Image (cartoon, rainbow, N blue to C red; front, side, top):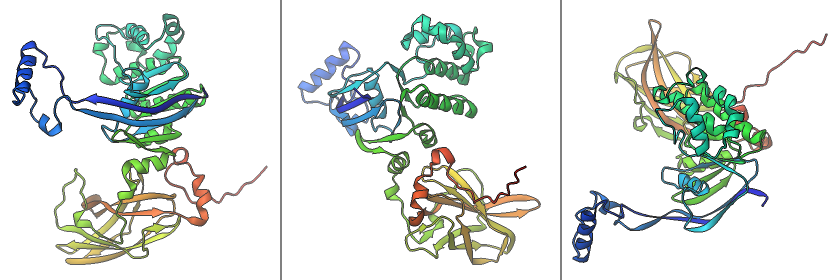
Length: 426
């Protein structure tokens, strides 16, 4: 078997609701009601909306794909799409209803970080107990113990009962144990969202090293698209138990966030745009409409300028106003910001023309958040803000080869202007 993992026409069926009442009395009540054609007195409220107790549904439907050895693959999809079920089948927590799963190598599963930790035991004791639960021998743990403690960053508290650990310390130690197992295949379910931001990056780098240096195969489930970009070479998208895409990372993310449903148009009502949850506005200045002037289909080339007009309503004459444009990917990742020069507004409707440069943005789909602010007494006061004010795409046909070679996971979401350098060799 050349692949590390192979799913062949895998189905997984579950039964809805509670099958037993938990007591003999409850089961008898349900049985008698059923044979009399009466409503089950033990049925939970709302169950009639979900389906009768005992109905069947498929969490996974005819899933087939292969994972080569040494590849990091992401599994993404909405809640209930079947991601965790797929990993549980591979980890042999449960068995497929139909089909088969083949794998070559020892599997480490991190479906619940810290499962098996005991609060009364010390960090050191929990390392040995948790390592044993995850399949390590005592000799393997002895060999790795120093690396585990050093990576966890809790060495000073390693002989303290874990019930006194903070939640961050707890998951750091748990992840460190799981990450140092000797296995050929690692499966992880949203486990890198641990500790602070610096420790998360440390975990991501550890997982990268496991694939690139140690040659391990990694399956990773996450709702964090930035982590998927950093860690995975390939992504599988699940939807209602079905595999709807298997391939390149960015295309998979577009499928997940529903790129096809983005409404590209020339005119937008800023009044209808959502506002940030935080922030208080006086209501004296309001963003009303936006028109894109130099496009028919919202497609621009790298280095283009967007000509647009914004209609602003003001209830008084004001000065020292400015716009801020925040560029985001469709998965809400902020990639950059542009700010306008200052201008004045008169009472009533104002139509303001702007030219927004796209110098640094790479070939991608974007949405823009627009805010209008006033600078007074060295203060920056935001008067109104429209999220998802408009959408556009950057695509350069003659520059496609260059764009295709650009790796956002390696180089980021923006490309700087060329640098003119003078080199003096001495």
